[in-house]
Image (tube, rainbow, N blue to C red):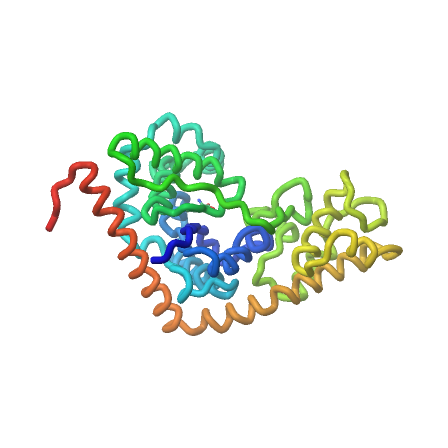
Length: 332
Ligand code: TRP
């Protein structure tokens, strides 16, 4: 490899991403490929910490993989793979579990939230979820990890585990840092702009999915919650309009001042329609590319098989060294 820094990130196999996932995260991953060595992974093993329908999980994993490619991740430039295809993640997870404290896992807010949401299935995998995430990252000695705020606590835990291992066994793991993209805005719900846009929202009108068709996108924007004024300006207290302006700005590249003058004297109806059209046009190539890639099953398989091979080769080197460090007998 070269001396570029290494970026690792994982994404849950939800099958389709929201406009929030796209603007805040995935869209920025493609451009990183030239500046960094990038490794991206669809985390199906993390997905089963909550109950999944097996057939749907399989389909959603493949769709997520194809969608990452459609969003500009090039499997020739990056290593793009499916987590369960690379056994080193599970193997390293065990070692890291033995270096993670019960107390620190108990403090994870995501564990607390998910336990509350699924009181009938508080399984051990849900509890040790952050150790597996640490294994994903540390298996490649990643320097940087692009994560949203909701994953910061998990990344902090990965750093602590790496440091603890290094203290116990001698300096070995790179202690990863969060990567905050230069551009990348937080997208809020269209129905309650105080809340983050989330796929699990009960109200489908709150969420734009990047595979939604043009009519659906425009309809959802038309219904977006705004305020009782009639001025397209970015100002405190105008959460709905601020959110629409943020979205419009991030798909057109226009700044807020330009947007304000574009819509001076116009009503919210015109503005919402313009946002809907701009978003739909911006996502059009992603939808087309997704359709092309996902119907070519042989090509898709070639990509994820090659990705898994590269990831295995890379992470196996780390794992073998870890096995020696902890005192396992050489198998060869
Ligand atoms: N837990 C992350 C999420 O839900 C996904 C993830 C798994 C991840 N492994 C990772 C993110 C490693 C960054 C690095 O979004």
